Image 1 (cartoon, rainbow, N blue to C red):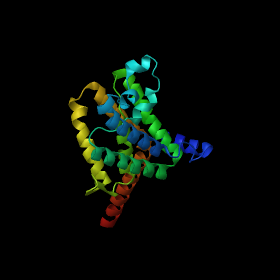
Image 2: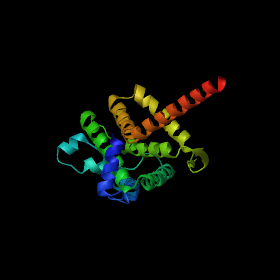
Image 3: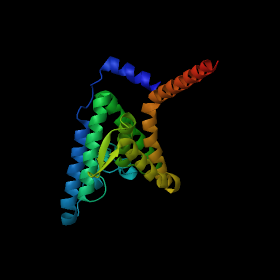
Image 4: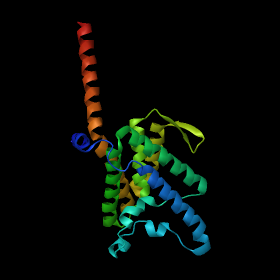
Length: 222
């Protein structure tokens, strides 16, 4: 059903309506925030990410911008790790937008943000990590055989990279706090929502091929 709605919306509005450089904006803002934290944090005790991250208490006090800016907080880790993560997000986001078109990619990212914010108001926890992870999973579904370089060195196919990320989510999903569990589930639900139609179509096609082969083998034995 979601596939039909998206197709109708693209027909009426246009496939390329929306923020065409959304990934560039997000990655650039995350990079600027990381650099600001790296320079100003130790020197002045000012961390820009602290004013952008999701905080239910701060939002209820009037800091509404956090509903949108939490996706601009940079990834944790050292400089090399941050550069690799931001570089891959830039690659994956632009690839997904090129495949889907601007409108569908914008809606996909927006749904991930909205789901995270709703979960955040319930649990008090929301992060950009799981929103951006959904972008990687979406690319892995569309291009499972595509080969990329993990950490810029190790060649690996997208399907295995996605599988590694899913395995790494298991401890948080099984033993983590409920806030983390819900954040993970919301991210996975967003992916499922946009791929449910194509998945059902693939299952029907697989069933049709299986029944055809079964009937063909049965007729060949007669």
